[in-house]
Amino acid sequence: MKNLISIMVGLFLFAGSLSAKVTLPAIFSDGMVLQQQSSVFIWGKASSGVNMTIITSWDKKKYTLQSSEDGTWKTKIKTPVAGGPYTITINDGTNLVLSDVLIGEVWIASGQSNMEMPLRGFNNQPVLNSSETIAQSDNPQIRLFKVKKVSWAMPLEDCSGTWEAASPTSVATFSAVAYGYAKILQEKLKVPVGIIQSAWGGTRIEAWMSTNDLRSFPNVWIPPVENTALASKNTPSGLYNGMISPLVGYGIKGVIWYQGETNRKNWYEYVKLLPTMVKGWRTAWTVDDWDFYYVQIAPFDQPKDKSYTFFPFVREAQLEALKDIPKSGMAVLTDIGAENTVHPSDKASVSKRLSYLALARSYDFKDVKWSGPVYKSMQIQGNKATLFFDFSEGLYFKNKTSTNFEVAGDDKVFHPATAQIYGSTIEVSSPKVSKPTAVRYAFKAWVKGDFYNSDDLPASSVRTDDW
Image (cartoon, rainbow, N blue to C red; front, side, top):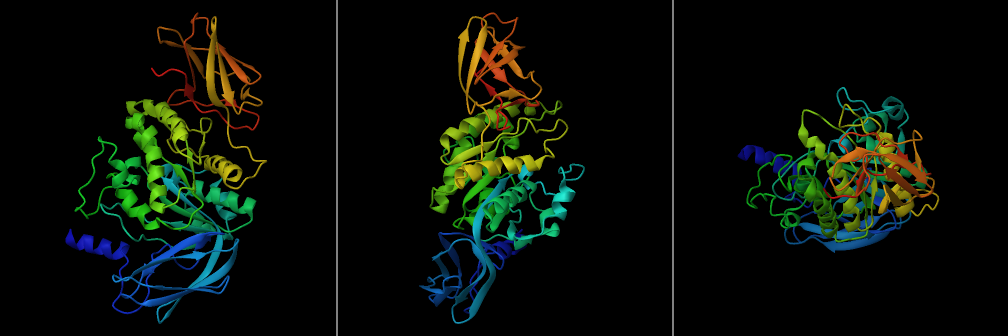
């Protein structure tokens, strides 16, 4: 075990050398993308107390600094409007030159398997239209960085990964959702886009949260601080330590997130876990202004595993969490789940819906619509329940009628209901319920959503009860 720990520490902790040579974390390397029009951090190690200069080729500005007693150093540099390629020269007596540096928009893509799922797909689980997408992927204005998967019991200072330009080789093994998102942004914004993939399938949100942020959840076991050994992928804080901590401080525009399936058994905590994670990440970055857009998990059921019956409750928790996450948005997938797999093949629609959020809310594209109908309130009159929605212009059912509404009375037994659209409202009733008290739409583990607005964006599953 000691040998294994030594190897991993050597791989993931960058240490100052005995010479004056500057060392940098992997995220700072040739081909990287820096967030445009910002003051971004750059950091590394050198000899103790050495005088250093950093020169940025886009403005020829010289930054002077001195490494600390332990050799660490950190400073901010100002970035221009999008462009490049540029160079950054770091000198401590010897030049270290970072080349092919682009200035543009930078996003982190994180979560579990649906975010990790590569464009070439998983075994026997393809990604829709992947061959065509891969073949047409050459674009030096899109840069990809994939963080190597590692779980650790203490925060690491570095990770393993390299910046690569988008090409058939690089995108094939990169997150389909993240690449598709970056591609849309690059085409629409016409600037370089850097996307950093930090995702691992089958992981719980607790693994992506810092130890400090988990202290408010007494049910979560927190590993002892002195334990520096390798952790399992679902060890609380393990992935934050190994795959997020090394990125903390890197200049970004925001984060896209696709996770939740593995938290189905403690769905009731997810409504607090997600906002706490986001607040914790922003606090670690010492900024509160980057955006956070996430995916509501798609419908799926596995009859042999009863825990999947909690999927609609996870979707509900994700919907509720929006209220507690500033500068956030959620992409709804009620209509593109897959009945035979938890990994829907239509990743392009996921990328598009995330991009609508970013284009409209991060980049102020007034013509881009980003939300389907959102339930607001209910009124009961006689044997009918009327539902009111925000983003309700042009409501329609995909097949002209919907089979996804249910209604219940005081006995709390739900029956299939007839739903009729009247302008921006929906009237729901059933001959078996004379006095309705609650309505549900698509509130099942597996369902094919069919309710949209005129922007062709789907409504989330929803219930008016808390039974």
